[in-house]
Length: 364
Image 1 (cartoon, rainbow, N blue to C red):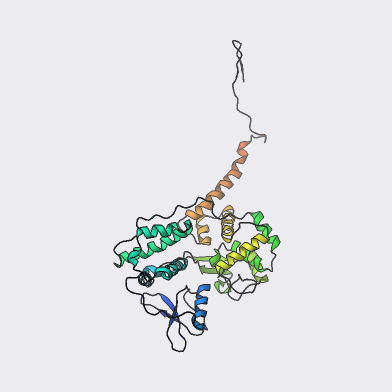
Image 2: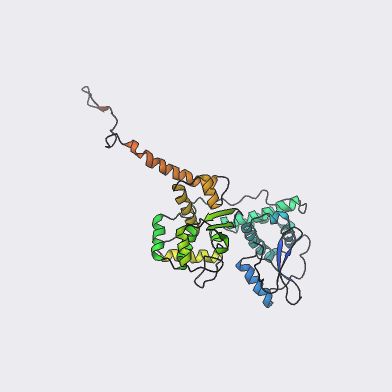
């Protein structure tokens, strides 16, 4: 979302670069422009905006030196390759770039070598290492194509191995019931649960969902991670919870103060609500998995699951339909393990050989 609702906060200005990128500036009384680097709509954006107003965020002394890491990153962020990234990818990569610029932005980008990348990767956790390498890989693949760099130093650097886990714990129906007993309708915590379970949205999209997205009882919005548009009828059970609230003016999910939440702050608050209900290691994403499991068990097809959850390619949806099909087939076929009279199936005839010298005896 690049458009700022009216009235726009004072001194905030929006410009579009020649590459179609939207950039935001704070300019007070025709003074120097102070660019806000954080993605629009984030808590970091609001923090930078307030800092620029109070003078704590100073304008850059000038453009970065040609050939520096900061210079290459700035060129990349002015390119079509950057524009085509999803909002979630931009935000993730912006965070990586911000740390790099802070620590080594003035150094030549040619100092980013395979050896330096391996060392940086190994200082991070596996998940952080993958995000770091994906960010630098995107930067240099573009730079080589744009003929700004001769080689891609990430070409022979592997991502750290993934830890083999089952991922986020899927909520059971008993988990959901326990949460509902602790948080009744009329509490913000109940709004959190019902928005998640009855839309299947990721937390980053759930915290943005509001009345402005609903027309004729149907919510339509683009997902943050894949930029895919999803269409979600508001079910009566969710409509009842929303009507009871508490909800905000633009978002259904709010904190105790009634203000919207970032996905990070919401994640922390939701985990606390889960612990208060006696649920450990439960998360918003695990609830999304539970919603997909419910839909698949109720007979949703791959195409229907992809439409609800914003997936594509069939892989993710097939995981749930396969599991649901196996469960359904097992239930339908279980009677085949019994005979027509309903008793357990007869044991197969076996030949028992009893050893005992010459007088060997045979039984059936």
